Length: 362
Image (cartoon, rainbow, N blue to C red; front, side, top):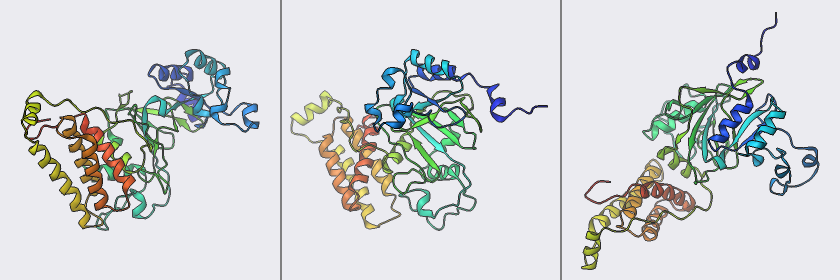
């Protein structure tokens, strides 16, 4: 009697790769082939293996070949049919950046737990916090969410989640236009949490339903589409260096109301707005009294969110308010200009979408 392998058993419950690739393309996710039975891209053609050139210089995509991994990802139905029609054993990869996707890749590898400072980069975990039992990315992501007072993304039933053959989890979110950068959770540089990778610009993710020699990438729950990236996660990604060095200009603030224009024309001032700005600046400045444990990131993010709301309401000048906030933040945390800029950019961007009127409602 022949016992079916994990891969052959999974194939009975999964669509053919060509159908998966077509489905992804219909959602606007560029796809590229993965090597048969593996989660890595299909190999380059002989010419690309031998020649020293970059993906930008490669002529293979124009000639219908899939060289250079996710750089060759496409939405072209003809190419998709040709690639997976000729190689039905190929898996399906999705190029995250062009798709506007941010995928939280949670690992559950049996590795030694690092020191506390490496668990959540940039966040000091007090010795009084009991970490007994912490062993993988599920735990560090849940800890980060708990510290931020947010729900655990691994339990988010409102977005696409995919269980990996190794026991990990891919949590899919959409965030078009931001250009978030990819990272590895084990990195000593850009990282969100230990054993939590970020698949975004410059990376790819295995499509749901894809089968490898180790098993299937199985969707979890009923949701099959990514939800918008939660604001608190966006702030954390900004804090940990996942924003590109340059960003497009912030949205144009709302035009002041006629009543407000009349007040200003008569020589009045926006005292409620100035008081609100002074309050958040004072909170950020107070963080400078202690080097750690002052919840500086949260305080600065909330301040930037409020400033963005006041700008959107037409009460503050965007550049002037941003500069005052940055100066206050850098004074509180000397030598951390880039970090402060990232937090302010993310917080103001979120606030600009929700105009704030002092004394009233958003």
